[in-house]
Length: 270
Image (cartoon, rainbow, N blue to C red; front, side, top):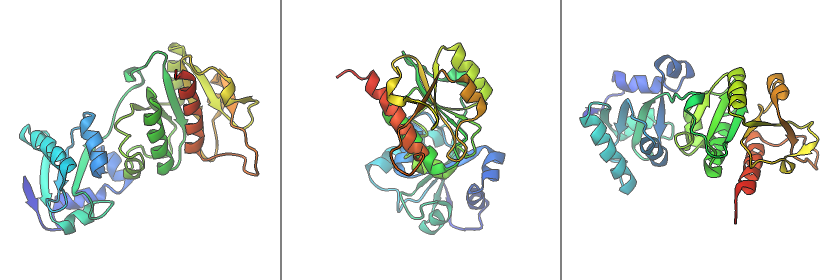
């Protein structure tokens, strides 16, 4: 394990640059930090390109297990590992001096045909999500609801933004995720005979009134614009969430949670 003590080290400069979306896209890598998030990444098959460890901070049972996995990757020459000081770790980490382990990982890549479908399938599709926090919260709900996968279409938010990783509490790595064009996603859903349930404020059917025990994809639109014309035309069901007050809509992550857990309720036998 190489030791780094200078902020002028090129490795440190390169990690700091990953705060920029353009840099992440150019190198096709992103940052993961936090013991829970790092643990989920490693447990679900992510092999880091680089690992930065502050020995003074990386303590405790969870850290020991992670360091053991990193030892293996380093021995296999799959991961470059660096020891850094507290001061350097605070510079490269979004959270400052915390946990003491930061990974640089390759972008997640999966196609629609690689999604593992349950029987019956249960999916969530998000078009044009704008806020990293919302996307992270949706991933946490998708994980908790046990969906087969999350499909992102026309995304305005960078899936690999470190804030998405943080807001998802690492469930970015536990839920199969695909980024795909809207037209391709609609065709794939039709080919697999999965009903498209589009949530729109103008719908006259309540989301609790449709059958989600059959193959189902819940489709949600962006915070500002809602669903586009392609999805409205393709929808097998259009549903709404009742609004009794002055507000005409709910937060995207909250709305998604309501619909997903209606699916869970209908599919659960007590």
